[in-house]
Length: 430
Image 1 (spheres, rainbow, N blue to C red):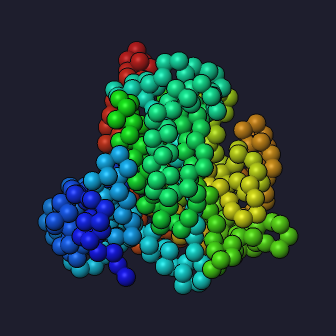
Image 2: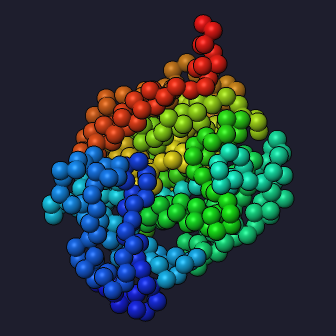
């Protein structure tokens, strides 16, 4: 039975609801609705002008309605009088195909048709920086190898534990928090679950981390590469496919099953096109194609390879029950990350795609010895062109791909028109 949000509001003391959706660029949009009006919003959705956000719509289009999913309700731990709701987008009484949460639900339905369920866990990396964005906030965080730095972690105890306590209260089962490889960078982990549930939590986590950081006079950024000399923000995703209570990735010999290898084969087949979505900004390609950072490694892939428990490849198989997809960065859309991965993986299963040779070398030092490894795109334009050529992703994601390409080409063109100081420094005296 669907939750009656008006009744839930009375029981939980919720005064307002944020009816929230994530647009194609990953921006979260919302309306703040008093509890007295939530019954109508639950029936019909909250109205938006789609063109005003990053969706491929025009001012002439009819109203866009965000219909809240009652099962997604999260009461804000830092402001419990407000309830957050993930919403699905509708227009003209039909779901909007070119919207992220609907796209993920469509791929989940495709998997369900063949008896499979995707489960995911994400590793969200972020920096805590000064409010003006110019520098990391902790001036004492200066180690060359700051990963797991106990002192730096504890100097941010109040922020990190408030976020973690919130996840504990929400029942997400967080299990560790650490200082990451860059100065000022942190990662927080919670238990994996159904792909849609994880995506909703991923979207909320970004909102929560930013909000709690602001409470403490700081700014949280998930920007892929905010500082050129430091490791960038990744968003690694652990993936498994299930048939009921059984993990379909577990093979008989302690290795990944044929289904798991075919899934990886599909991801590898479409990796350059996937990058347009998992690495969605101009800045993204300063992370995956970066020179060695201050700490000694970028921790990001630049080629399309897979391995065992080795963090220098795009796909890592740490155990026989899952794989870790290391391509995506902090700017990735929480819904499009699993959607595009599942679309590619299902193609791999349906087409029995081989992942190719497993490589157990250090790709950072010996990658040059692998002559036939496909390279990841060097920039956003190359990635967009790969997506344009991908029959697999265009076939699976339908109207979302041309809408995404149209908006992202506009973003690239805007970037290309921008004159940088580097150009002036290197060209004025040409």
